[in-house]
Length: 394
Image (cartoon, rainbow, N blue to C red; front, side, top):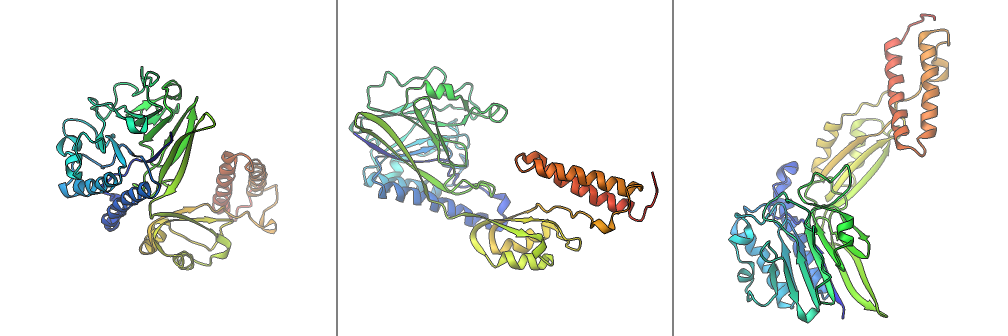
């Protein structure tokens, strides 16, 4: 028997979006639209289960109308006999003030609490069984935002009799030097030892999937970006559990549900005469659904003066958000303008040019060396300004 799952997380309904200013309200609506699109996906895909792996809400303080909008979507799923399982996260944490304690989502969705059509996993209800699907869903959740231990500590699904064993966690996979201080952390070894077929994760806002031992795990990422630097957001996952020729298989497919697009436009500085011309060129691709990243590259002409903040402000009306990165390199002096090697400036220029050439060659394979070359070019430009006209000999 096969089971099809639509997996989402980190919807963050009600987020304030202070980075978007007057566009914040519109982005909140886009987030709800992405949640609705994920529900549409579950219906179109003929899903058996709809999993929300934490942070459906951005906080536990939400107006009733927002909760009722969510319940209406869960009711649509229930009408198609698609079972929803929700896991509290680190924003809608399952503490005494939990939104899941304040509101009964089953009741608001108009379904019987014992039907299994809408389930919320809590510390007191860490699993839900679906005999008709031969599936059990385990939810490892705590009543505090910061977990006292790994949610997989001492856990194993090996004793479960169901054909399919699915887990849900809102937290970070341990990456030394990066995630060990996060609020909820678990290790790849614990995932591998869990005995699960699929581990539905939340907390990371960019899509990512992998395997630990024989266990498949995945983060769907946020269905709409919660911040404008989340380039891998905007997706939900369709997960199919099946047995083919006696072999258990887990297929994970990313599907786009969000409207926000991330666009990068690379502009060669030598083709730009001025800052207004740069703004005009980029604005020609205006798109209210796009986060535009402008990268100014190449050798920077001596007479090109740009201000990143001014460029972002000028382009803001044309896009959802704008990022600007000046990646240009300072020009090397023409050979006929370099003083002789017997001068301080001439000796310095020759030394820096040799170091620049070596760093740029090494930078073809080493990003750190490429950055070093750019810094040396800037140093050379500063040196020329400081020592311009000096003819002091060594």
